[in-house]
Length: 19
Image (cartoon, rainbow, N blue to C red; front, side, top):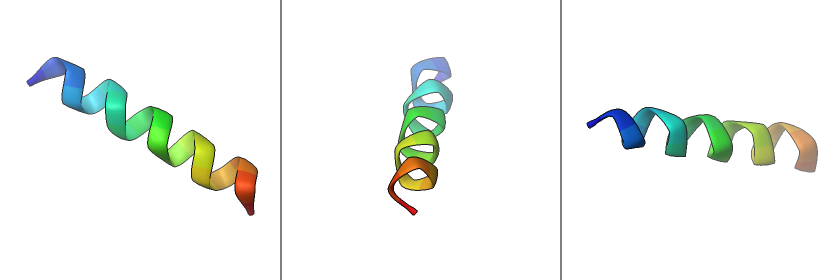
């Protein structure tokens, strides 16, 4: 599940930007 890692990374990035 390599795509999962990227997906989480994008999610984290979005969350950080939202903050």
